[in-house]
Length: 80
Image (cartoon, rainbow, N blue to C red; front, side, top):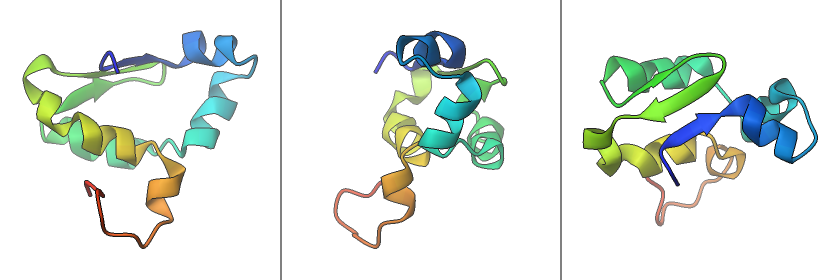
């Protein structure tokens, strides 16, 4: 992970819209806003960047964009 997501760039690689990509990964601006309030990242509708000094939390941010993590009751290796 390069700690940066540009939704249009990634979505064009998969020949889908950025909106469809965000839906696919379970994008939730309220969850991301909580990370932003904690000083972990900044985001807009176009992109998301995790701050260099907050890489310890990168796995938590990635999990927030993983629909399988949201719907799982498994406890091992779950960062949230």
